[in-house]
Image 1: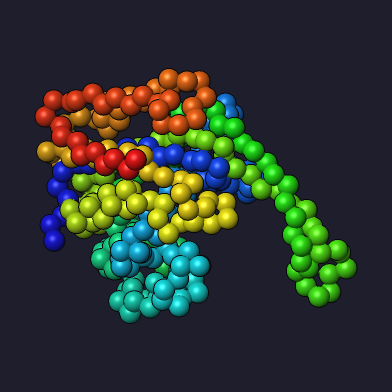
Image 2: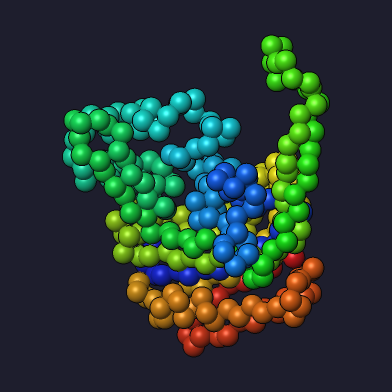
Length: 279
């Protein structure tokens, strides 16, 4: 497999309808918003979904969520120590190389290995794939609904079975996020062209196998994925200029469907773009 030797930029537009795309645990799990009321989905949340999609493709993943563990390890340390060469080596460069070779998400996003106690200095891996938080194009309306739990959690509960709670959702939102893949870091982690294609497929199918009570199937959908391949390692244009070549404007102040959104893509000379049309 050949190491990625050309820069990649990408952008993803997705829709949210009657779902909580990323709850804020410090705010009663309400959908995240900035101070101006625009919806947010953190880059950590997006990377979690990409990891899940890579795992669905059969890729070895280091940072697995508990409900998706497929190797039986109870912690990241256990997973790292299961690789004999990692457990035995104190060579930081060798540790870096073996961990990147072993796990797809490590050579993609990077990882800090800092659980070996005082015997060894922590080891950091910088990954080539960087992702911005997703921001909605407009302030989002959030509906909060009171719900009832009609069963006791334990037999010793003295409370009545009917317990009140809250559930929150974004009524409708159009979100966009951007990202890039850096060739200098790809060389260090041995990130390949094949890895890049797997990331691209993960973006196109980001919300598959991601359903929950807060995000029912079909409530979050990919609208567009833009994938720019440069023809040099450093890229023909800065990432900011590439991302700004995608213009997304609202026809209505509060959109209700994608018909209320206008998307235009300006061509940059010599830079090709692949467009995935999800809807």
